[in-house]
Image (tube, rainbow, N blue to C red; front, side, top):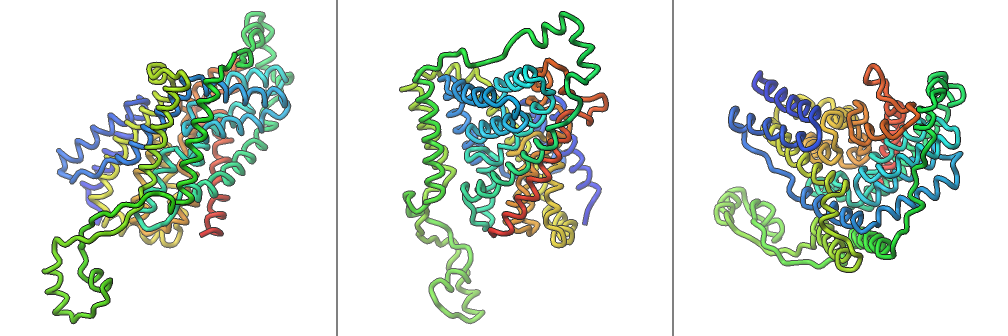
Length: 482
């Protein structure tokens, strides 16, 4: 039964998320801590569990990617992408999103695209293409790639939580679904953006701007490029080490039998299971007595090394190799955008997921009774919940950590949840995310805009098309495979 107290506490959770999103950055996780404190100290709710495993993985992955950036390896990747774009400038509306997508897939964060965005805009301008077309969808693609990265928090958390809830899935199996689905979504969004808006030579507002000599010089006067940079071999070696680390992680995810196993003690909590395992038959009275005797018993079993540990070990080791052999400076890594954005994600996931788990774990029976009829009839409807929560909290990893356990407890099959995984990206809806704001600022032509009415911005159309198509295709693939 839903009570007034339950509704009030939900409003506190949503209020903390809303206020945190207004401040952005570290505030999202910190203000969630205020919500958590109110739930625990004012209402007496039992604290949930902070997502420590996911946080450790993010720290390891972001440290490795940040060290690679400090070594100059990211500059080399950006340079490779720029060569491709300048070789085919007429196809930039399709190629730019692919470049930002795969950069995110490799590094695990969408914040690596800030160097590439001015280049995308510059190429479009010099070719006479409306920059809004490639820039809008490229910004979307940089975030869509998160659910396709083997080291992204959203993917790792999905695998860990799914395995804990009985859905046997690995990182490569997730990528087999998410990568083709998201590429289909990006292609649809790029196709819809190909003729979007007026061409620059027919846009009266743009033509009026370039009549001003100062504006013309500002728009066309400089060329953003990385092609004049000399990339040292040490930077290239850092990329090779990083790619090798990713290959090792994917290898062990596919061939988990190759991982070492360890004998571990576990408590025997269920006397029925214990005696069934031993092929013993007992009467009901004997079973009751047996439960008394097995209280506190343990048994040995062989447990393979968990993938979350594998990722942490490989990423940290790879970072160390870059520091030793690739001239990467740790202080430079800490000052870089990749490491800083990753640490912001850690705080956000820490506060948001802990607050959400505290609320949902205390009211699971009521939530199940309220939603079970809906999710049984329409299990795909959980995608709408994921999308709405993402609009609020600006983090795909936090959405997975906070909402996936609830989805499993509601009885939604793992295959369905895998199918709707792309729906955890919804924070383009309100254009306050750093990559979207930066893209608007990078577009010197002024065609990429926030919009007078906030929601009529340059990212809405490609974002909706990409997420809807990606989710539909993902749902179909997951249904076929599982």
